[in-house]
Image 1 (cartoon, helix red, strand yellow):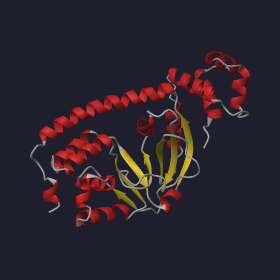
Image 2 (spheres, helix red, strand yellow; image 1 turned 90 degrees about the horizontal axis):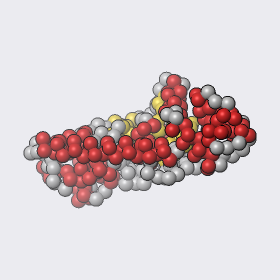
Image 3 (spheres, helix red, strand yellow; image 1 turned 90 degrees about the vertical axis):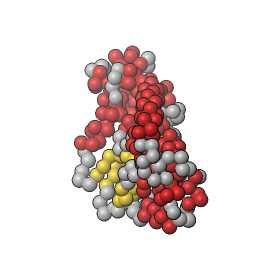
Image 4 (cartoon, helix red, strand yellow; image 1 turned 180 degrees about the vertical axis):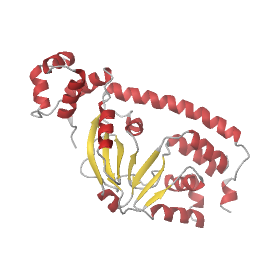
Length: 285
């Protein structure tokens, strides 16, 4: 999917109230270059893409956030706007079989609830972009999770490692079966930092209560995971957003600050709930 550059270019210029000639002077190109790109008569070069979106972000024009707002306004009943941060371009249609099997809930297509959430996970990759997805949940079966013991143990099962010695336990088998008895999943996101906390629980270092509150302290929002062909058939890629270097750096710094705050909250939660709850070997007796 290509960027909607002609429309973005016209929108940015209109917000700034600049003529094509004035805008061209601002970004260091000829007026004819702006004209041809606005009309879609040329394939935009990497240089002009970066120049335009970088310039807009410098002028505090958050064009991708503005488009998110407009797409939300256009949603119909039973539709949701979701977001996927991609390290590179998505070729073809959405595919549930391309994802790794050791993701939070196994193989599937992973999406988030907001633009900020999606970009935060790919801001460290040079050629990353964010895709907007229009999703209709009519007649689909959904499995919902919250930050609790079921969620923690299900993620530990799919991520592999410490829980391997318990994978034949009836409780774990039941959790695995329940996680696939649906078309799509809505669940809290667990990044690598959160998985380290879950591993501490699985390794018997902290209780389920400690783990739950530590994980709640590092809240990253909710994710939607399409795991059936039926769910994918009701999800449509509608926009691919270009991320300029300065926007990428902006969100990278935000995530670093959030991570520092989250780490401190985890330390407090771990101390406050020490000795409360059950250890893994008490649960899987």
